[in-house]
Image (cartoon, rainbow, N blue to C red; front, top):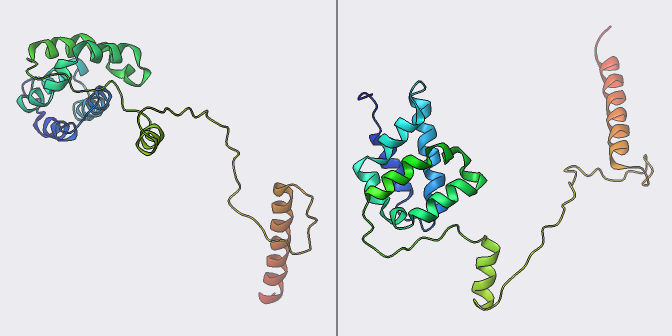
Length: 182
């Protein structure tokens, strides 16, 4: 197991969470780093890889804000379906975070608000809230064929497309038949 090297992925993880403001961001980046290590060392248990990553000195430095939010971190791992891949390793993560001393006031949020909420609050003040109901979107066809008078307008789009493709097919057949020598 001593041949497992995590230096480059640990430094990459440390850079990616250096300016993180949410527990969610730390966990998403941790999943990515763990997957990279699992791809690099396919026969090694992910728990061993995770422990090796989390005990790297540079990673321990950047995990300090997360250590201040240990309970929130474990709650998010256990309850949020986006972090389901980390659930088997919650005990490892918890024990590593217990070892790291929290020397600053907690500054992380659980998860970042949706962008439309942030923009609305910036534009209208923090005292107002926005409630946007999701709406069903109709799929749009990318190609709109111009009306040439050959096809009636009342037909559904897919029927019009089939008619146009048939006309093109006949035109190509006739063109090739008269242009190519027999």
